Image 1: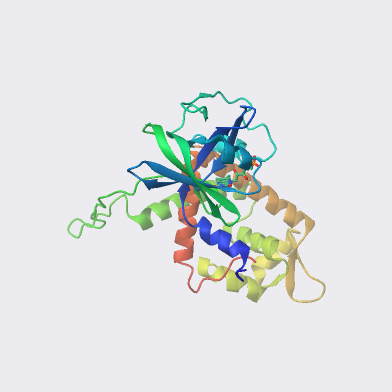
Image 2: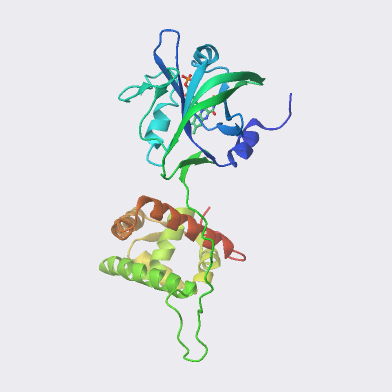
Length: 318
Ligand SMILES: Cc1cc2nc3c(=O)[nH]c(=O)nc-3n(C[C@H](O)[C@H](O)[C@H](O)COP(=O)(O)O)c2cc1C
């Protein structure tokens, strides 16, 4: 027995990005059987061999061991629902799925990226899996985008650009800065989004600094003025007693018991939640102009920029 943590091991294996396939065959009653598998791989060109592995606990094990044939369907990026359907144990995996019989009888599914019809050539013990090696009798391939699986999630593939253009960011002669200057893009996007958010805040007579204070108290709980300043200073703001008195006067915050830490009142929390959800709906309108994948990429990239620049910057909330 190995002594490493099973979850760590699984995560490490999941770092290897794969495609996703559905492997099909027939059971002894000639009914279709199928399973989602990412363990598919090529083995040999001549003879043409491929492999995949099946967990020994699978309901489909006996059928794959006895049928003598299987078909591998490489899924395209529009087929994640189909992948989920074929990964649910105990369900009718072929419900609503059109299929026809292949050369050796394995069910053939439509609209995939590639298909390999195989005769089962070898079966090997592989711990808690059985490794199936098949000889490819027929295959088809269509130019589509593949569905990928990485770190427990589906993913799209995007080829890496081969040529990275070195664009001139600042023209030393004219003093002009290129429109693709990263800092310019980031600042402009921020100010344009913040401008709209500020209009929402102004309607409630709350300025940017007050919004930060309400946000920090909402996310962190009770905080003293020093603790607030510790978090807020990198945003080039400073919290003064007068700011806190002003928020107290509006009944948004109060002193916690008799110590020097501030907490949100009911009204303060309500106001913060209302403002934050107004800003969130504004954000949805802006992001609706991007595709779902672009939104995910955009957030991921922003997070990476944040991580890359977070040295000496305090965590804003716990
Ligand atoms: C993306 C993905 C990849 C998978 N790859 C495999 C695999 O390579 N081998 C395997 O045995 N199970 C794999 N599974 C799990 C099986 O699909 C699942 O356990 C099986 O369909 C359960 O139904 P069954 O009991 O009818 O076999 C995968 C699941 C997903 C979502």
